[in-house]
Length: 309
Image (cartoon, rainbow, N blue to C red; front, side):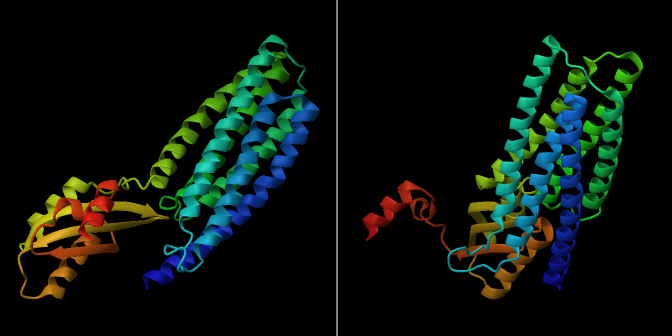
């Protein structure tokens, strides 16, 4: 049943991503043309965001596609990690584009450029409508759980702000003729985008480094398991990481020799699933606590085993 649910969820994610990608790519082209014709940096800044948006949405689409592939001997988790990699590359792209726009804005303070306010306003409004549509498409789904759809929605959010910035700049230029507002607003938009890009980069990098998911506190989990299940004496060598959206775990549990071995194992799994939403856990049960060298990750353990042999 759970599998069924995930499958339809993946499908709706895919449809929404595809629709948002189409809208974004079309309007990006319009904004680039408009930015060049009107001489507006704020429009180009917005088009820059839209470019990374389109790339973000395309990567998210590919990632959803890849994550549907079945695991095999070479990739025992399938290709779920690609979604995290896509989010990371995406964040990097945003940082680079933001830096370029800030650089250009600083240059324009010293050498102001003429800006065609009317054309700029028309395109900025159209861009805003396109962004609202994309954002609505992405936000209707299970975006909270999927780092990728969230990454894409963040991009579009930055874009929304970019379009609002461009509209305000266009109105000020039309009514007062004060062109420095154009680079000023393009920098403001860049700072907002920078914040979300940095957060996304940190989160995806943490996941790529096999960091513990934010939802799991390892100390609390080990304590909790020892207190909740009477036969459990000690929990050690706990490893928790995340693949796609699924937390995965391995742990050693020292237990009092149980009357029903499988029953106890089932209770441990059940506890992890109910309390921590960890459906995929590998539990090694032992009656004596294992010698530290034997089950540590790293160089020491391989040398230790070597001596044993």
